Amino acid sequence: MPLAVLELYLRTRDGAGVSGHFAMATGLVVLTFATALGIFGATMGIVLQAILEKPPSF
Image 1 (cartoon, helix red, strand yellow):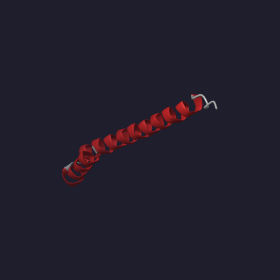
Image 2: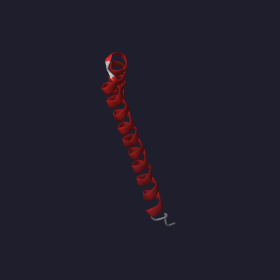
Image 3: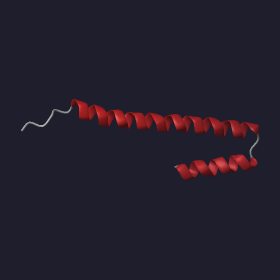
Image 4: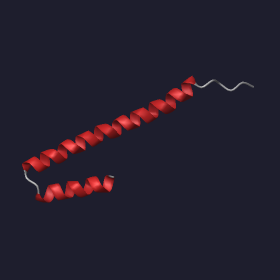
């Protein structure tokens, strides 16, 4: 996926007009938010699981 995004970015940078640049910038912003949401979700899943897990009984 990152390589595909880089490929699109480089093609847009070299040969696209203003609308292409705007579309690429919008796509990068959307992918950035998706990545942040995924990191947040994974972190909360791990942290909440650790918090709600019963402590080991000895």
